[in-house]
Length: 149
Image (cartoon, rainbow, N blue to C red; front, top):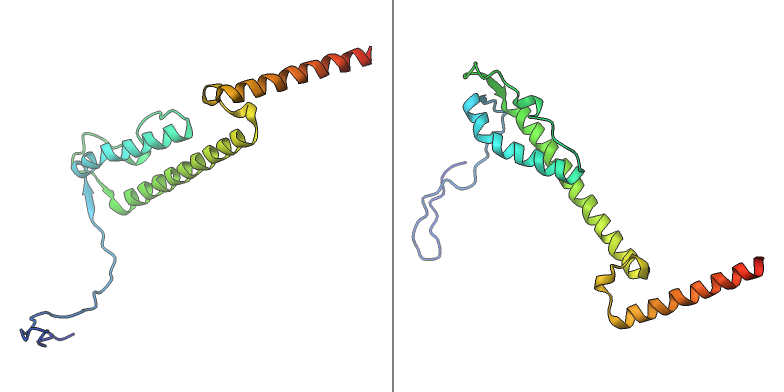
């Protein structure tokens, strides 16, 4: 597009190029071993978070980062690294959602079933109420056993 020299509200001409179309093209950048070392901490942190959320142990570095240390100028395709990172990020998001859903279910169970609620969170009146319920239940079991004999 051509430049716009139109006056604005104050009468001053703008010297901008206006909106221009940017050509989209695939860019391939080669990543050196030094670049990988810079990103390594972040990748391991994400892997550690994922392992924690999944409840598994991480046995070592992911295969993409296992490089020959003697080849300082080794390169890895940046697109491949981004794909791997995107996959890990998606897995973390899925596990966070699963954790949130499970916490929601646990809360719903606590609200619906008194025995699922931690005793520490119960009030004295609730504890008395549940104690009476358990005593009644125990009495009914004894009566039922007496009727069976």
